[in-house]
Image 1 (tube, rainbow, N blue to C red):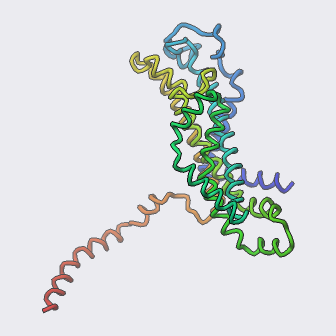
Image 2 (image 1 turned 45 degrees about the vertical axis):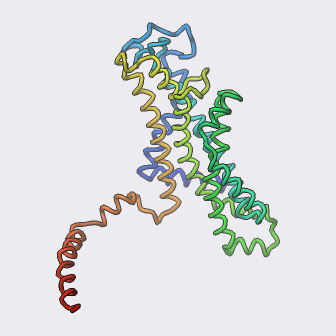
Image 3 (image 1 turned 135 degrees about the horizontal axis):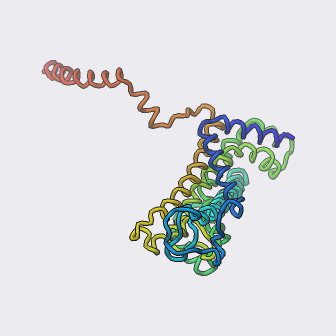
Length: 324
């Protein structure tokens, strides 16, 4: 019951946040489109019998036209592509949060041995070139999206683990952790029952922001031809548009459609992540740092700066005259 109430309370806070409300609405629409794709799309892009004439302009029943190379309905490809983007982004975000939390908590509270081992592993992982190794791994073990999720998770937990570790080092010196230790609680019990809830806010926020970044990364890999060739994704749509000569023939809608899909998905999860950051940190103002800087520099402040610049030469000359 407590967990359910906390989730409902958290969703209510995000919904009442302007950025969070926009993010939840967009994310909800994208999830609905991905789940209900067979019912809201006029054609099945995977069915070769439902392909019309190649290179058709937007109209009815092909709302965004058809592809030049295969004659697939672009609108149906766009809706089905949301499945891959959301699946890879959300699953990878959750996997990175789980692995990063486990490694960070173990490094921060597991003792000197685990701290040294995990931090040296983090140092090694940070210097490994990710893209070349991703190309090698996908060519060796296949280009399935399961493999891509695995690669993103292996290379994505490092930064989160370092942040979690620093947070754990602060929490381990708190009074309730010391009280649990004096009460005879085991190290594992303290790690999962006291420290993990203490960093859960950071994990939830990181999952939302990481999912947005993974969606862009997946689109980039699919655009480079490293995605699953049997599945339709927004990155693959862009790659096919480039190879099919969409710009050459003026079929701009073939490029704009997946681009808008990528933008909306990333924008939605970024809004949710920023809303979570402000919900979990009430001291943080809604305006960004740059906006707050411009707000602080008002007219009186600028006038004071110019006055100081005007007074400085007189002061310097007076100092020179007084020096002899």
